[in-house]
Length: 165
Image 1 (cartoon, rainbow, N blue to C red):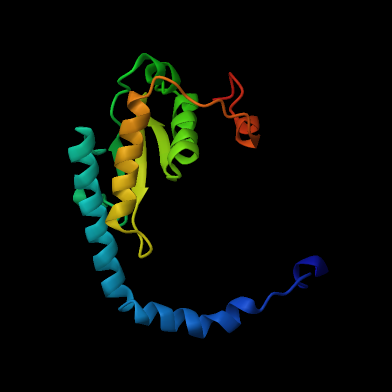
Image 2: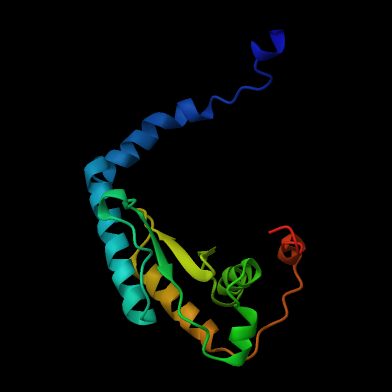
C-alpha cells in the first residue's frame, strides 16, 4: 500500500511554466480566437485537398465533427508503381505515410478505413494553409510516381508482421 503513497520522482517544471503558458494562450487571443482560427483552417484545408484530389470527406454529421480534425479520402494511385506500393492495406497506408515524410518532409496520418486509404488532417495554431498545400502536392506527386527510393531505415523494423492485422 505504501508504494502508491510515495511518488518516486517529482518534476515541478509544469508548475513553473504555467504562468508563461497562460500568457502565451492569451497572446494568441484566448480560447475563442484559437477555436475560430483552427476551425476555419480545417475547413479551408479540407476544401483545398478536396479540390486538388477530387475526392470526398468521411461523412460525419456536423454535430459530431471535431473542430480541428477531418478525414479525407486519398486519390487513387495513377501509375503502376504507385498502385503496387499504395495498396488499400495497412502496409499501403504505412508506405504512403512514410514516403510522404521521407520524400517531401510532410508529416501526415494515413489510415485505412473500409478498405480505402484516407488521410486524417488536424489544424492547430502552428499550422498554416501552406502546410496543406504541401500535403496536397506531395500526395499527388507520390500517386503519380513510377520509381521509389529504397528506404532501409529503422522505420521498416516496425512494419506489421503478416497475420497480425
